[in-house]
Length: 194
Image (tube, rainbow, N blue to C red; front, side):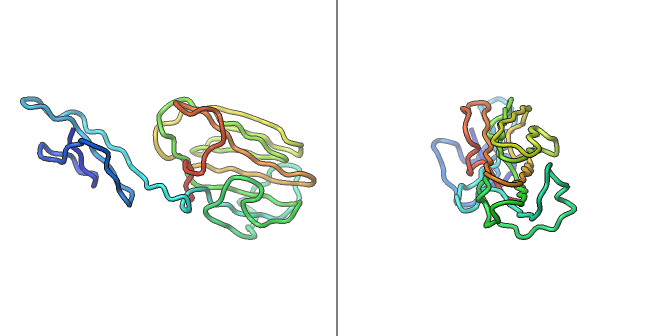
């Protein structure tokens, strides 16, 4: 198997994949199999990202207001935005009550397949993946769980998670499960800010 790290098509004299290699910057790996007397195999490409904990998470914008359902955040000016941030009500310094959070960025699906998302929140929340609502858990309520599922291709997918807190306790958690992924929280390493 020959490969290149710049996205170009690997040729017969390309470096051979013999052991694990390391990179300190994101690369586009292109790989193909070569066998004497035969045509080169199909070229498989995959983007390899470098894991830096400080660069993973989502962008989080804070909004001020009291609502009984998720508002149209696009019509409200955010108080502040931080990036990257962990998913949760403590992602940004905020008041105890009367606030909204909008998390945006990308989710990395490690493999193609069926994914189930579980959203737990107090109060309302909604998860959109690639512009489609996957989980809706809206209105004023205590900690309530809602779930939804969909098919994701391998790679990055845009995500938008909206949340609001009216009064009382606050809670927000996003779980997932999918091909080779047991049910549990979406790890920060799978999230990227815009």
